Length: 82
Image (tube, rainbow, N blue to C red; front, side):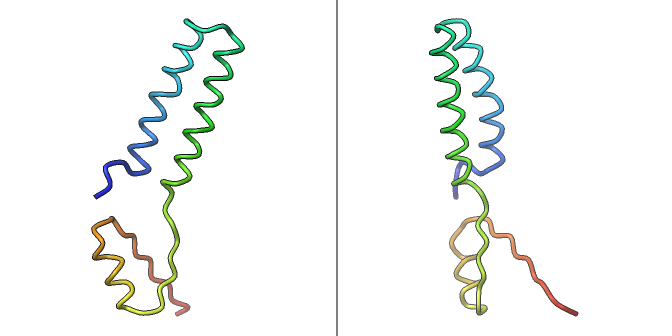
């Protein structure tokens, strides 16, 4: 089971980014603090892009059973034209 999912990561980012901005404002020169917070923000967005749900088109039921059996949460969406 993954310890960090996209929602817990979002809560982490909501806490870390403002805290790092305050720390950079208080202890670093303005240009270095701005650069550090910007770099941290870019890194957090890059990690968030890895946490996104991936769409998988499965052709048969056995592939779906294999996906469900991996131990990770799975969202199954069924679509019908009828």
